[in-house]
Image (cartoon, rainbow, N blue to C red):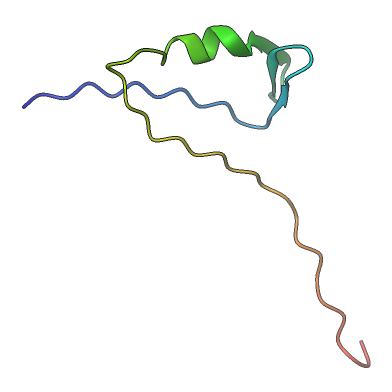
Length: 67
């Protein structure tokens, strides 16, 4: 059976529930999207989703005795 995959990826982005936005920070500019509009694309009784939220952050190095 044929499949259609609908994937949206926002990199280096922040979500604001208060402002209903997704703000994506690129090296050249800032792009703002309406969160509810993005979610609406995936809404429906016949749509079943796999949802992943992923956060990237820096890990501080461990302190080693004597260093």
